[in-house]
Image 1 (cartoon, rainbow, N blue to C red):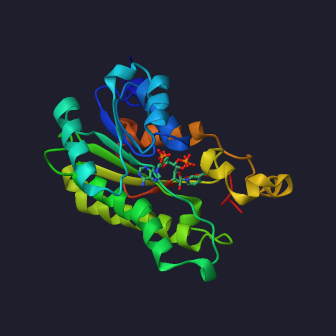
Image 2: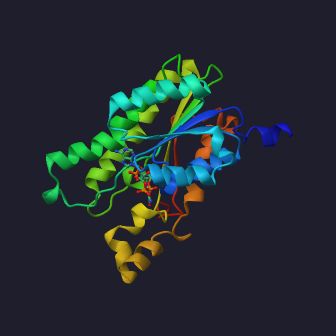
Length: 257
Ligand SMILES: NC(=O)c1ccc[n+]([C@@H]2O[C@H](COP(=O)([O-])OP(=O)(O)OC[C@H]3O[C@@H](n4cnc5c(N)ncnc54)[C@H](OP(=O)(O)O)[C@@H]3O)[C@@H](O)[C@H]2O)c1
């Protein structure tokens, strides 16, 4: 394999992916496995995690943990077990998330806590565990947060979701500075609307006219999970070794206007 091709491969890298039981996280897992990574997959639904595993290259090479990422004790145990069995992490993709659509008047404190717990705090806690010197690869580690275009632009009913994704985009920049000397990189990916169980359960997807309107906001049409997975694989690979603290927008042109 020549050097240029080798830079995009993930052979020898242990990579954790949350949200791996569905949609974008599932595809990130599949793509990374085909590029040679050994995976540590997180999701709550064991059956769907198992389905993801079946689509990976060499399913027996990987580990799955069906846990709620808000349970810090279970997450800490999983990280410990994974490092003991597979070695230190070279990558982490924080993809698990929830996407409420609600106007401010309907937004309760409990809902704010629920969204920030899953989208921000759980991701930060897992990141903290992976970035411990004993858990991260001495050859360097790449951490990717799956944010959203809603982290930088607005949409009706997306204030709470947008705030949680904006927090990831902002936080990753300071983490990039804090950990550069330890060779740990941090970046975010901001997708536009991608066809997944999450987006297809939205109100607009249940109405053909509304779905057409949302599709029309994306000059290249709606995205596929593969479009985001390819970006994540690049950020996890050595081909992106000089990229840290940035937000890669993958949105079919949604924010170009
Ligand atoms: N689809 C889009 O248009 C779009 C656009 C921009 C950004 N995003 C972001 O991309 C990410 C993935 O979205 P998706 O569309 O692939 O959604 P999805 O199909 O609904 O998948 C969400 C994933 O998150 C996991 N998850 C949620 N809460 C969890 C928890 N407490 N503990 C463990 N796992 C949890 C789910 O696990 P279980 O199903 O096993 O519970 C599932 O694997 C999200 O962060 C989302 O905000 C999506």
